[in-house]
Amino acid sequence: MATGRLAARVAIVTGAAQGLGATYAEALAAEGARVCVADVLDAEPVAAAIRGAGGQAIAAACDVTDPASVRAMVDATVRAFDGVDILVNNAALFAKLALSRCSRSRAPSGTG
Image (cartoon, rainbow, N blue to C red; front, side, top):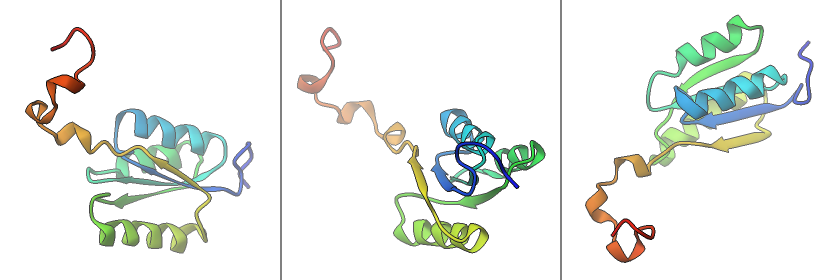
């Protein structure tokens, strides 16, 4: 049985295939949470690392801009772990926006 501050909790972490999202997923698992590692990229390596460390995790392909994809990811999490208690909405959609779409009047001081 899992121990830790989050034992018996279920977490979904979006944008969790790498970087900060992977760190969130691993930290939640280290505290006992069962974790859905969700991303548009391949999240299985992060889920496998969590399982390899003794945690419980599933990987789910999920595009957070697509409601059907989000619904399928939540459904998979509920099937695997009987619920959802925690959401870390880490997916970074802004990374795809062109810099030219930013207004100079909204640019941080000293940049334009």
